[in-house]
Image 1 (tube, helix red, strand yellow):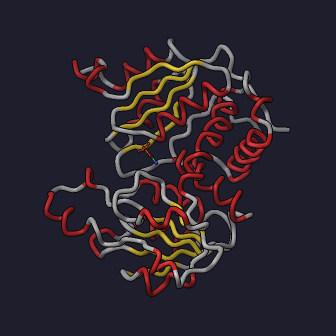
Image 2 (cartoon, protein in one colour):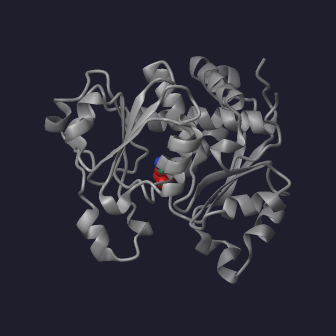
Length: 311
Ligand code: CP
């Protein structure tokens, strides 16, 4: 089994064996970072970001630099020739001759997939509109594996903007492929998980799904609470955003009823949905989660570039 030369557009592109090989390598890197500090020597990562990012872009860059490779790219489409009307197909054709692997974030759903069809190098989806965010899913699953011990058998609650939150869409579909996970969906009525994803969970994966608008009603039964930001940039009008933006604010008081070993995760950035007082709680793991993102992306790129093969 080799991931060399593959694209990662949707977590469903990879089998569970392939996903597990990424986590296996990420855990090896965590144990001995020095051993991997030169494996990408001579390799170049292109970061093509048509939408704002802190973690995804910089953790990819850190990952390549920590493996001895180099990085080029842009963090604002307005400083690229996109501003002159160049298509993503032409951009990736050119970038394919400048670099060995590319990560693309784009506001349009499907843009990284389109780019992959014209690319001579592996393309990684760094988040496309409200659709998918597969490397956040790798980050999230590695965090769950490290801190919960297993990606299976957890009751996972997703809270906030389940309609537009691409991190939720990628993660919940992937978790449903692992055995014995159960889901609790907590959102305002207008921001419920899209029906097509619920259909996958209920019909294809046959997993238990509970929906509620009330976080406090269910918090005592949860193993992992995945908080999300209300996605301001995907709303059609400001008034709806203002009305919904503070639907859920996790604070110390609400946490009193939660399990002592519940994980509080968040893909970040946080706006108001987790009180700063919660950061000191041992269950709050969102900053460790962001750190694990570097190791997950190191492992992913090493395998796609074929500079490392798992035994
Ligand atoms: N989690 C995440 O995608 O963060 P950024 O938008 O900062 O990349």
